Length: 162
Length: 162
DNA sequence: AACGCGCATGTAATATCATAACGTTCCGGG
DNA sequence: CCCGGAACGTTATGATATTACATGCGCGTT
Image (tube, rainbow over all chains, first blue to last red; front, top):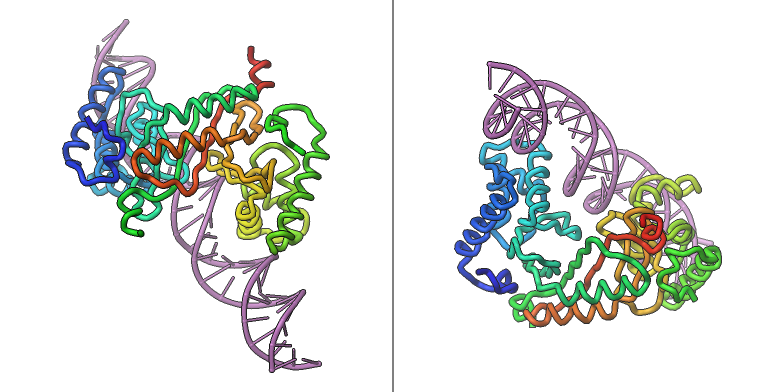
């Protein structure tokens, strides 16, 4: 289920974790009537290899190594598609992308970025989103999209430092 | 006082608003024992001209027009200084910078970005920050820095659209 | 006064991230 | 079969950001 938002920071059965996300992605695309083509699928697999955010050019390099095109738009298009379908997220702070760990769930993701090991996790953001909506509403602002990105220390690195 | 966080979205006495921020900035720098040099001061003035976020190259252009250097580091250094001193903020979503409206106050800013008129306001973010800390702490993550950026419609544009 | 030091500034060059514009291919519906 | 749209590929360019190095200036020490 990959229900544990902190899995990114633990040892876990990552192969299973990635496989689950991938099959969920297939279902979601089928459902939405959009095509998870080979480049797109491969881009998602690449992002799923690690719980880190990868730059578009990192992804591009791997795609090119697999025989796909080697020009930036190849990567950006695949990544944009994934983001549109909610299968990946863009982490602006890092100019990078990461696979969504709970695709399909309606979610207002909060990203936790470890400054030491670069792992990225999605924390449940409902409470944060509520607080944000409240703050915005109090001055008459209507939020359509929000991004919350926090940099800090993950449990493992925290322990290692202490 | 510039105490109203939504001033950015209203008509207000902007000259006074900017002047206040500038004199606060002077006090803060004196206090911190750092120098608000001419480029830095001018960069801040430029950001204060509008409640919008400006790209580094926009600022650079204006600085150059005023006789300062014309290479990117000139702008980036001034802007980095302002951000370090809490006199300005970086809006990653826009790859841009905006003057802080309440410099000196300890604050966890939440940025509200109007998608129609591009105004940027800082909402009080204490509640959001608490929610974020709670979410992070529940999985053992220690937040050191966070950015919350929301895109949506400001009160004026909301009215205009309806 | 002369020196040495740190900081601020300036420049050139380059790295990194992202998009525009256009042609070709593939595939399903009419 | 043929058309039309979506996906993919390429070239070229634009936008954002940093590295590295040289110069000048203030200031405390000698």
